[in-house]
Image (cartoon, rainbow, N blue to C red; front, side):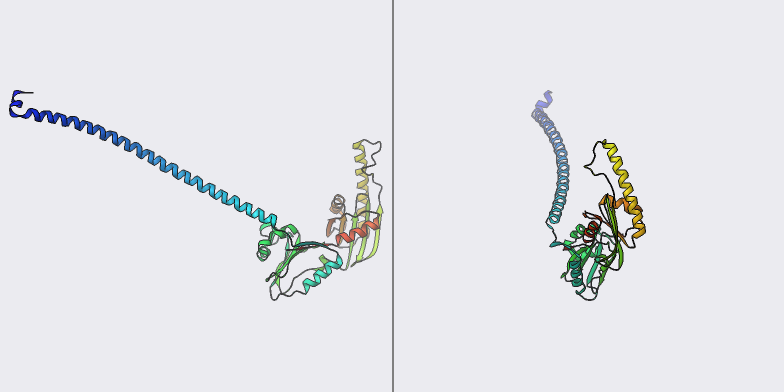
Length: 315
């Protein structure tokens, strides 16, 4: 410091200025540090905001998935708890009484719904149930798919709510009319037709007028049973048995072509029915698996009773 500075009193000012310079440098350093901290905090805050948004999105997705699963569970529980009010197998007399009862119901102009379910390529909604039937039966509509193929009947007031599964598959139909439109020939024998019962070793065919059998032809063929293997090897036994069944089915085809009239209903053991139906003349109008056994005529009588059975479902 010069002598002139001391004489003029500037020495103290210079020292004070130096002190302030030092303080300023410290403040600047503190400012820079605080700015760096603020920037780091801003970055952390942005990261925290992003993480929070991502967590919120995950929570929303999980909540949506939980709600979906709970909805599926509720619907599955409803389906499990949903049941028919009653199910009954109707013989011919009982089926005729039910049809008479339904014929007597006249809800009024276009207030009675008749809809086939699971038949043909009609206006099918969810589960093969026509849209009109699904809307008419409401929450109980899923029951219809359990009764398929069937004819569903209900009215605007819900006084009638049922389905009928007839022996002969009905034509596709979805109609609102004054009364229920049920084709009785699908449920009850009408006019002339033939019914044939076939098993691996038994066959019978009858021509009928309504419920009355007019003619009958039948026979039993020699076919090795599963319990008569004897000294044959398994492969040879099965080959011989298949040949005997083939010969039996050939006899059945011949008998049908000679004695059956249309329409032909073919029933019996499912495997034999399916094989015979492929090439039978006349072509079967309906087939069904029935548990009818015995000699040819006994088998045919039991098959007649089983085939002409309607299943009634109370919805």
